[in-house]
Structures are given as C-alpha cells and as structure tokens.
Image (cartoon, rainbow, N blue to C red; front, side, top):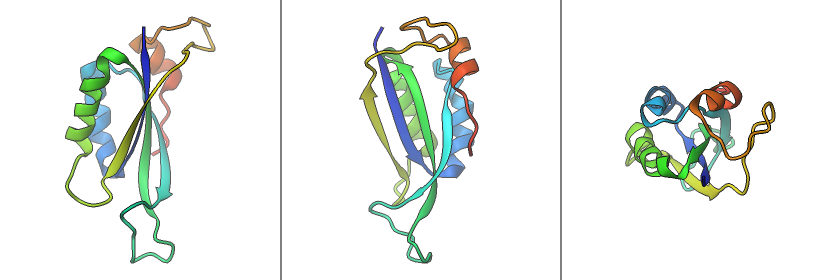
Length: 119
C-alpha cells in the first residue's frame, strides 16, 4: 500500500468542519497543532505580522487522497487571502510503534495512535 503525508495550514475556524467530515471518507486520524506565521498575507494590525492558524497532519492511503483534498477545499477553502496551504508528500515507510505492523493504516489503529487535539 502507498501512503501520503498531508500537511494543511488552515484557519482555526475550519477545523470543526474538517474533523466532522474526515470519518466520512475513511480517514481515522489527524494531528492538530496551533501555529503562527505569515506568507503572502500579513496581519498588518499586529506588531509582528503573524496570524494564527491550525496545522493539520494526516497520513492517508493513496486511494483516499483525492477525497481528502476535496474535503479540505470544501471545509477550509475560500477566496480570502491567508486561507491556507496544503502539501502532499510520499511516505517511505509506515508502521505503528505499539504493534510494529508495517504498511497498515486501519481507521481503528489510526484513531487510537495518531489523533492529537492541539487546537
């Protein structure tokens, strides 16, 4: 099985809609982190120009990638500057530390080992 590592930087208010829809497409885990930064959009009303976003990290089976990207566009997409970005990277190897099973990404295992709530 081929896996992809998806990192999405998105507005914090998009996170609840994203979380609610993930299980619908078979994605059983997500790691969320609060982040601050700036890119093309800068917060000129702040002394340091930084804006708060959420960083979502997901490991998905390659067969679920298209659905996940569509879901990200649906849940977090907007024409407003600073909406966010998504990066997709290949995964060389994947295994669970608890079980040591290589190349498995069952929704039960993903939910119990990779879900973290930082936002």
